[in-house]
Image (cartoon, rainbow, N blue to C red; front, side, top):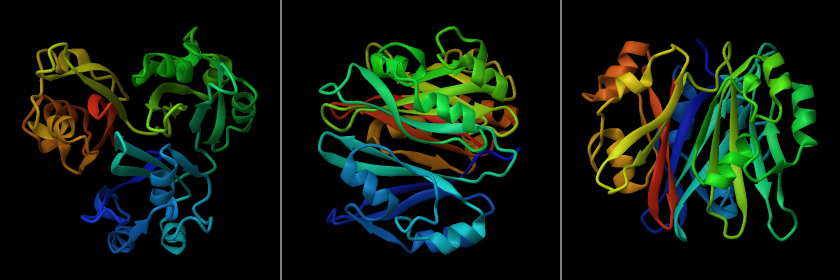
Length: 312
């Protein structure tokens, strides 16, 4: 199954913090694009990763032929069309920028949205950017539907300050646009807060259709009450794997496994062969036929309070 996300990149500050350097990535069959990427670096406010660094919030680029994107020829040859950059900060210190690059076609259904609230201007959250593929009517509704705190997927993630997964949003009473979602076949959604610009509230919404999923599985992991281990909180898998059963009793200490390493370092990470990891995560991925994973932490006051994993 072809996922909407086709490439994942992690950019991290150089030792002198003057530029962002390539740190890791998943590129699937896009070998030429990988080769073009690994040689690059980005200054502050330069290119898609540098723009996310400077703005301190996610940036969606609907067209990779935009001059902001410095690898336009490579993207066109790889048929990559849009991207989103997600910065991760510990206080004022940038840890990394995670970039998802996507490919679509005339059959693609789904959306990536960026929602924003400025408390000085409004008590609601508005969609400020997004990519919607062929779902033009759904885009119009999103653009004209402010979201109150605690309402819908963006409002729920805004209120809780935590990632939120919604299964079958077309039938969920708390999903504001459920009629349009049901008509488009959107069957899972992920809301990811971005709390790094002081005084501003941002949420990224990933809306995934069964035929062309954003990713094939979403998971949320969070520390337990004592802060001694990372535990599975919720998830959704296209293979209908029973994740509660797979992860019953599973726990990751700091620095143990990919998820435990992310918890310890606060750095996003990727694994091209996650199914080979000798853990409950690897076993579950292998059973579901999933090969690779990208994961991003959510930090609060410099501490990781959740890790979101996406599988491809």
